[in-house]
Amino acid sequence: MTTWEPVIGLEIHVQLKTRTKMFCRCPVGFGAAPNTQTCPVCLGFPGALPVPNRTAIEWVVKLGLALGCEIAPRAVFARKNYFYPDLPKGYQISQYDLPSCIDGKVLLPTAEGDRVIGIVRAHLEEDAAKTVHVGGRSGRIGGAEASLVDYNRGGTPLVEIVTAPDIRSADEAKRFLQLLRQTIVELGVSDAEMEKGTLRVDANVSVRPEGSDELRTRTEIKNMNSFNFIARGIEAEVERQIGVWESGGEVVQQTYDFDAGSGTLTARRAKEEADDYRYFPEPDLVPVEPERELVERLRTELPELPADRIRRLEEELDLERATVLVTGGLDRLWGETVGAGADRVAAANVIANALVGAGVDPGAVPPSELAKLVEARDRIPRAAFDEAIASLGDPGFSADPYLAQEAVSDTAELEPIVARILEANPGQVEAYRGGKEGLLGFFVGQVMKETDGKANPRVVSELVREKLSA
Ligand SMILES: [Zn+2]
Image 1 (tube, rainbow, N blue to C red):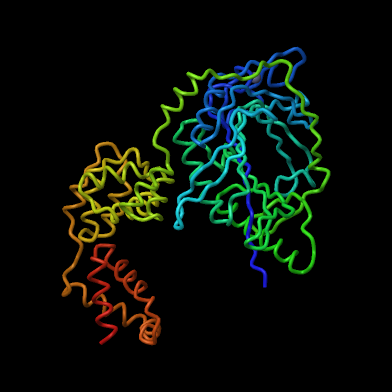
Image 2: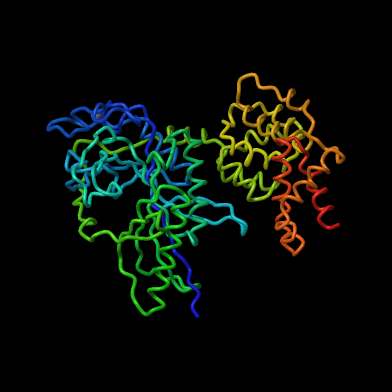
């Protein structure tokens, strides 16, 4: 039987958070009233001339350097011609055959060592306006009563990043994207939030027999708005393609929308992807020729990148914890908390679980106070610990009042409560004794509830175990 290997490439659009748009002075922003951030340039009035945004050009260079790309000494904007209501000029200005950044690579830390993900190109373009379909189901054009266009987004600077088909699993795609997103955020060029559409990802997927280096027909998956949906969409498509090949069929080049709710892929109509854009160089713009000194200055200004920090932290923790901390932007706080005396692994767990779960801004947390809480986590009541963690970002927070509380560890006090809980749940007791030892957590949880979170969970769990094995 054939073992199949997925071959995945990604196309990523990143909306830059420059103050103004790509070719005019309209502000870039999210959430303003529709059609209030427009001008003759971004509305495509005849005779209006584009002027490139210098910051956007610097930022694509910066991003390209972080992705290990060569920076082209000469990049050219082209007109990508197509007609659509969200494109008032009738063309989109985009770098085409001469992009700003080419031939990069990202080293993705994995359990099997670094995986090399090639970056084919990263180029600058302008975003289209936003079309909203009203009255239909699911916001799609089919069945809608009307379509409204908001030109605020039109002309926002975008970087499109295209990877080589080097990704070999849905999980690897997700890890790559998490790493890329954190890199973009740390460079300060975009908030890269999928929910807001400032980061958008399409996946090209094909499969081949493992060990072969052929490239079979690929399909494209669009409309996935979280990293988990992307992974699920890729998984679904890989499975579908394997089914097609194994039943003697042929995969056909197609674009699919992934519906996360039902987990299904829907093929788009072929005419939606007409692909003859008649590109030609934009006559109103000169080529982009960044000075060598600028490129070199930006290169030396690059911070230590997330991939390098994962590798460094992996030595002190493990790959999974290092990845969660770095891609969550939590590793600086972790380092300072450990520096203030906390245990490495305990600090990593508290930060990645309790702190993130409580929605606390890591930048607002005093590391010395967090270190005290990490140290006391088994000694103080769970309720006090949770409350302290949730308040860590408050100005002037002190852990001391919480540390003064002691969890109830007195077995004489806890024993009757444990006995009562066991008596009240005879079915679970029987199941536990019959081998369902996972129920231990249930009993401990009940006791914690009974004591308003004041019991020491470690002592409770010892007591429960003792009583149940008696
Ligand atoms: Zn404008």
